[in-house]
Image (cartoon, rainbow, N blue to C red; front, top):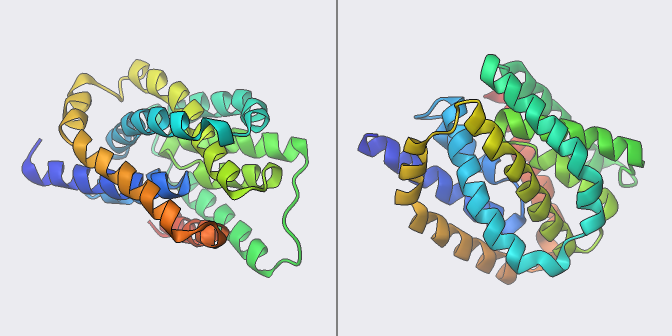
Length: 239
């Protein structure tokens, strides 16, 4: 790997996992556009997935008491099915049009949340259906977070619990995605070596992200979620 590629990898991982630590989701939505400046989509997904493993171990340990276990259990099977299907699509095609569809869906949800008179209330079937889609997009683009946050906000109301539950769900998705990526040949030893080189930068991002969450206060959390969803929607739709 040349120096520019390594710097791009470091910047992408730092930016993505700073946001991931602060918000509990959206790490891949920030990291992916940066990594795509130098890497192909499958390789970018492999690097992001590796660091999601480290992030999940660190954050789940710290946030375990706040995680809504029932919500994670309800989404577990649908997420696993979706992730496997998504990685199969990633292995055999270039589904860029699906990324734009995801972007349009996210922007529609943000618009509804901003203009609607009440929050969107999903029944169990709706939450499970979005869970499959979230797993699918996690497998294809590692960008299922915005769909998961829609599900979690319908079940969980406390800010700490929303953030912690998102961390738990993305950790579950990562456990499914890593072996599937390895078996498909997308993830390899070479990527693990370069991930180890920039691991200290990842740790710094985790530390600063957590500090930001503590300092910024919980009153701005839901507004920040909508802002990140809007940015991610436009990024997916226009790229």
